Structure formats: structure tokens, C-alpha cells
Image (cartoon, rainbow, N blue to C red; front, side):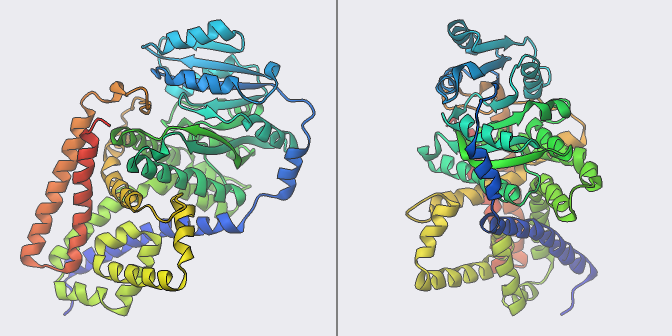
Length: 510
């Protein structure tokens, strides 16, 4: 039986979108391999650790906005760092309208001039504007940027400053971010894994291979000269951290991800706060892609591979709208293509090969469009590993999920849920970008400080969006069920189920 033109076009479009997403998945696999294959030049690390004779002056900068008691924990950790007392200062630029300012003023009163507080009446430029204000009042040759929820490890500066002295072209170092509340629940474990994938695995791979890396917004230290060279922090994107990292490296400065120097942060304590942060990150990465793609392509010092990788890192968040398009095309395909043709393909050698590749490169898409062959392949591979390589499960769990006893099953399901949910989370930022609407910089909720600023009607809107989307997918599936049922069509219910559960997580306060 041959396909009609409409059926052929729909199927071809689905294959194209899936292939496009597979490229991003393949790139992630390559970077994961590079992390093991590549290594930092020994000379850089050895030189850096050998010989700091006189410690340079460092300014620790923090931008705060209604952080409450969280900021006291930050300042206490900064005051305890292992660094000459006369060689560092702490500057806090505060835009708060709550008790945060009074807490900061108490610390300034006790520790001035070690701690200086600059209060702004307006939030001009948001975090970027605050950091520019701090830069104007800083004496440091090096600038350490922290967030209000950061807890600095005492040896951070003594591990990073020598690397700058060993390499005059080094513009900034991103330290490793660890988590204060990772073990609180399955949700915080899941969010920590999501963070680690981008902050730890990918940044480590990119840095070891000499490619452009991002700055994660805090836990990083800059050479003042490099910041001045690019004109400081820009306020034209909502992701000023990513923007400053690309501008510094495109200007010719080196950057390094150094996992031996670390600070701690909080992962969002509620699902709704994670949604707000993802939307900010999504819009920021797309804005930076639009801002920097020409400069990357025209850059004379970057190899073709480094240019492609830099663009792919900025474009990675586009996999979520592509996933939504993939879902729509999958539903259309299962609705109009005869089920016997669909089932015949997925149970053929070509179908099993396709689902196997998708499981490796993009498992979320594999189980959405072809759950039956994906389940068979996953079952066969799991049985083979358990039979012949039983120790591999523990290694995999420790390396990817951070669990010594094996794989955290709840966290695995959490990763799938978050990925499907991000297909909806990207809709509002896309609409804002297309309409040219400026979005207010909303801070992430803290453990000790609930973000009421971002909670004014937002939860209800997110809840309604998920309920409506889940109901729509369910109705479309019922149509397929009554007219053209294939067992593989049950995969389209996975996003609907995920959205239904994420609706509950969004409306739940904690």
C-alpha cells in the first residue's frame, strides 16, 4: 500500500524533525565522550598550583533582590575564605524592597570597609545593571561573582587565582557548582541532575577541548581587564551570564571550567520556581543566539568545529519547541497513515535500528513516537548488561545520577517529566521574543524565602496551560483509538500524563 501525498509529506516532515533533534542528541554523546578522552594541559594546572608569591586583590560581587536571611549565609561563607584578609573585599548591590537591606546594613556596619552595600532605588538593567554598578566601585584585579544563595568553599580563591597568574590570556574561570539541598526530595535530586548535565558534564567537555564555554551566573571569577575589555555586563539579554562569557571569548580571551574549585548553591525548592528559571534560561539562550551567531561565524580564530559547537550550545534549547512540533507531527501521522504501515515499519529491521539510535541520542522522543520497539530494545540491552556487565549499572548510576548504589529510578522518571514539560515551558518565552516584549528578571525562589514576586497569578496560568494541553492530546488520542489504533500511538500519551502531573507540581506550594 502506497502513501498519499499528504501522508508522505507528514511522514517526511516527522523524519526531518526527529533527525534534526537527533543531531543535538548525537552532539551531547560526542561531548560526553570528549569529557573522558580530553584533559586539561598538565602544564596549565601544574604552573597554576606552583607559585603564587603575592596574592592579588579580589573583589567579591553579589547582586541581591529580596533574598531575606539567605544573604547572611552567603556573607558568612565569604568572610571565612582562606585568603589574606587585606586582599579581598565584598561589594553587595541591593535592589531589595524587603528586610534584605536591613540585614545587609547590619553586616556593613560590623565589617566596613570589608563589606560595602550599595542600594539602588530602581532595578535598572536587573542583575547586569547591578554588577556594572559593583564594577564601578570595585578595587579588585579579579572579580568573583556570586549569587545570594551561594556558599563559597574556603579554598576557592587559592585554587583559581594561581591559574590566572600562569596564563595572562585567561579571562574567566567557572568553578564547579554543587548543591545544598540536593537530597531533600526526588524533585531536588532531579533538578540537580539537570543542572549537572549542563554545568558539569558539558562545560567540562567543552573546556577540555578548548571550545567556548558558558558562565553559569555565579561561582566564577573574572580578570578585571577582560571585563573592561568588553565593556562590562550587557543589559540587552535576560541571560547576562551567557552573554558575557561569549563576548569575552570572542574578544580573544581564554576561559576555563575548573571543577577542583567549587561553591554550593540551592536547586529550586519547588517545581514552579524551576519553571520560572527555565523560562528565563530558554529566552536568554535564544537571545544570545540571535545576538552572537554572526560574530561566531565570522570569527577568524575559531575553527569550523568550534564555531558549530558554539552555535549548537546556544541553540540547544530549541529542541523543546522542536519536540512540540515532533509531537504534533506524530499525532498527525498516527491519525492519517494506516496502522498496518506504521506497525510494519517499526517492527522491521529498519524500525528497530531507528528506535535504537533514538534511544541513544534522544530517548524521550524514542518512547514518544515508537514505544513498542523502544521497550523491546531497552529490555534486551538491559538484560545483556545485567547478565554480562553487572557492575556497569553502579558505574552508570554514580557517573550520571550521582548515586553510588545504582540508578535513582524516581530521578529518571523526573528527567522524562521535566523534558516533556519544557516543551510547554518554552511557549511563553517564544511568544515574548516574537512580540518583542521585554520580560522582567525574576529571581529564583530560595529555601528560606518564597518568591511571592513571581507568584501573582503565575501558578494558575501554568496550571491551566498544562490541563488544557493534556486534555487536547487525550482527545486527539481518543480519535486515533477509535479510527486507526496502533499500539505505538500510546506513546503520545506520555507528554499528556507528564503535563497532568506537572500541573499538580506547579500548583503545589512546595
